[in-house]
Length: 117
Image 1 (cartoon, rainbow, N blue to C red):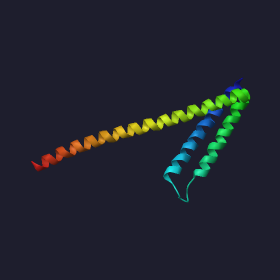
Image 2: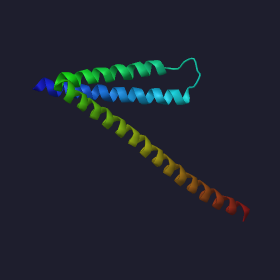
Image 3: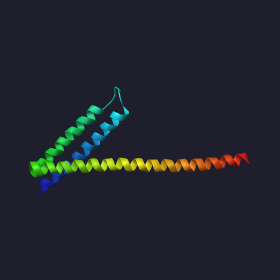
């Protein structure tokens, strides 16, 4: 029984590594287009191998059908949480930029008016 919990924990860790590598590959594909030093292939290889190892751990822990369902739910949870984090991070950075811009324009206009008077 303890080996099942260990295998599921290893599967979750490998799944998280795979999702991280997938997101890094997507980021590199968007930002480093047509550059010679582009690690997309390595990130994709890491993502696929870690997901394959994660699927293997789930299949060993809970056999083929339940293991594949567990692996699918692990991948869905990891990808969903990563995508929600990116969306939340984008909203927070936009809100902070808007506040900084409002402070900058309000402070700058007051300072400009004081210099004119």
